[in-house]
Length: 465
Ligand code: TYD
Ligand code: MG
Image 1: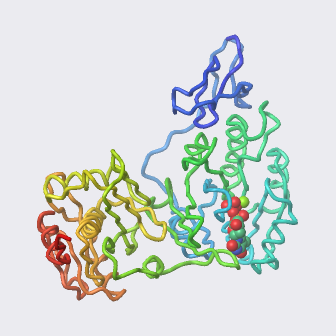
Image 2: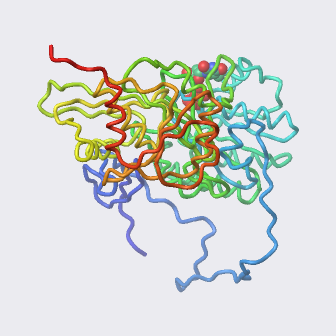
């Protein structure tokens, strides 16, 4: 048998080393290695005395066959059901990550209460709070009457044994996976080995019993689900719960989903009575817009299947530093660098002596290249001092050549803008037919030079002082 020495495991990514080192080669994190006992072989592993595997023979199937569509359990919270792809799938495992205090426990307690009220058995296991604390929160949200089975436990074997009693639960929530420990794993709770071992046991329970399992996972500063990055590939869906501390709204986003789309978002607002659904996010994101300032452009975006309008704010100011600053909140740094380079090369803007700040209002994170045009408009507007028409929306992708490229689902973007009272849209000249454009006046641009000229024409004359 191979000799088993001590093993060092990176607590950030799960990479295994046989010697300690200061930095993890796999993920680049410093001081993240800690000594752990090697994971025990999977119980039930079968090896005969001569070392050859001797397995059970099973029948193979064809792709074509009778499989019912996964029956789903709707939580009754529209925004949550939208992100899961239409409800929880029995026997599936969901990992939900987010910063501490963002509202994971609150959201899950609301989902549990709603499901329990519909007559299903729901078990909520908290490893972080006492039952008293959980009960208090439920009371404050007016959910105390809901027949949720509650426990404050951290041992996985005990939990699985308890779940085996009585009728099979439809939903089991484990809050959080980092607090769980399994007696079969010789490592401290919270270490990668324990998290992985506990998750494996719980997932095995979900798959064999048919209960839907939700694991809560904490997120580190850089947005990774700590430790449980090793769990991410074991589960069926990974959802992240995001939000800015200063804003009351929260966004639930699917990062991976074996049973649904990954680009849908659910929008919630944190109130004194828990989380409430936001069915019209555009109105929320545009709520307090300063229309009379240069540097603001409304982007008509798409999140999943839903159009979302959001304000892009730019500030371009002469720098006092040797190297000008570029800071972005809510968008990609590299994408901003690209738009700036295009504006300098093809639009004739001089930005080398200017700091550039870009912000997506309200704390939303935009991932679409379609935001390029709105970003460019905001930047040119801030630099020139020209106020953009407040009743206009912008969308379009900018190519390195300066060409403005068409983007997908333009009609839905236009309809949303029209619904919210916008009057015109600045958009790419090519692209599919947009029908009547939702009644908006469509102004089409083919190249950034046209955009720059259009905005410059609105700029106040800056006479030399
Ligand atoms: P919580 O769900 O405990 O966060 P997590 O489980 O992600 O760590 O939410 C805690 C925060 O939510 C806390 O700062 C208080 C706030 N909150 C409200 O504003 N209203 C409410 O009704 C509840 C229950 C919490
Ligand atoms: Mg919590």
